[in-house]
Image (cartoon, rainbow over the protein chains, first blue to last red):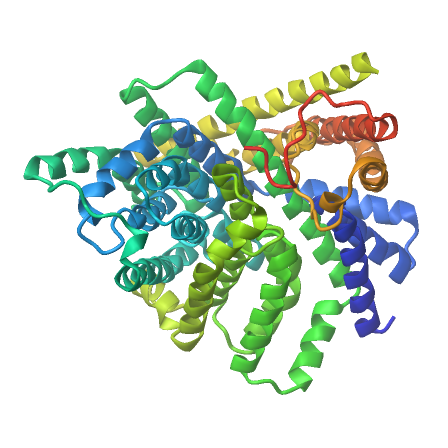
Length: 438
Length: 174
């Protein structure tokens, strides 16, 4: 079969199955099975035995254990008073900045993202307190919602990050390097957001109410105490990774331990809390891991069809320069991000796009950061964006209104991608400094 | 109908509880390994293998529960716009497609379990784990998922409400 025709046929299957509303992992598996059965003419029993052995083998990848463990850690923290303390601890520090408490969203998410590996968990945990408080205190609701959705997605970019672990496993790139590479771009995005809030506060002072009180030295002391839990968690998780005590995949278990220690020390440990957090963990983790399993099956099918090589050759024949390629890929991911969600995008497309990017001379670590940024943009584009759903639930707004509030932050995200393409060192400087040039 | 629906959901929850215990065990094993390696320069030697079984079995065993709790995400472009009979029809078709796919995987994984059991295959590591045990647990998870999807399918035909209130939209239930 012609590779182009095969590619188009698979894309058509994908649109039909996913568009119909088949659960994403099953849809991807159906596309893969259909590819083997219809395009390669394999008999059903061979397709089934390939599907079963790939599913089992890819589910038993031990690095994946970081997925449930990071989710569990986040679920434990979500049920604690950490986010409440985080909000109160940030108040005195942002009160003088134009836009005032709106910055608690950005800073809160940045700090929390450094503890937690998932965007949904970051958004939910930080927003649990800030959303209600900001609205109650009379802040502009659009900016409050938009900045939370945008900054919440930093959970994927700042280490530790589930998306980067997954990319590292699939692309066979050092996860420590990826973690380090996400730091500067993450801070860049946070900086852009805070800058936007400052500019908006100058242009339209109405978005933030006047400050009420002056803070004394004692208030700063109390605030620092309130920030201690988050720094405690961050210190343990990142400390374990960068001291070499634990590998990035093992760091998740250390994170769970740190969360348990924190909950016990602050007297919040309850059996119901452990039980609820575990049941929530298995739900989310099953979803993420099954999408990964289905993606391994898809990439096996693509391999049988020789699609990655053929597509690579076709694109190479077009003599695109690297910038042209990255532009095409960016548009491709923006469109895909509208329909498909988070990790699913990474796993579905990586077997096709990674060889292209490598052939064009891009660094695999840089490409990982690029991909994660593109996925984060997908988190805030309707109709399928986890962060949008979470904010919809929190604000009670329509999906459309939440999406509109995210608009400016979507543009800022695109700006960050542009900067990353223009200055690859934003991502590569820190890993090269820490681990030497590859 | 109620007994069937509740029974299947009970099974899903029990499997999810087992998955939760597996996750706890995985956490403890990783922590043990870190402590042994860092302070005693020793190892359990089977961390990769055990955690590999753990993540595979925990994932598959949680599937039925995650499905019923609407945590397995789907694209809502079409289904969220439909209501009543039309929605139930599309949901039923999706359920059949999922059943066909997971049935195929389950069938072949099942025969792998039987082969591993009959031949007494063991892992090549120090632990010499009989391979049919983790394979069987994964197969069990797929079976429970299929039962849960079948129960869902029946509800679409009968319009019977499920044991779990439907979450709005297609996102994760939080």
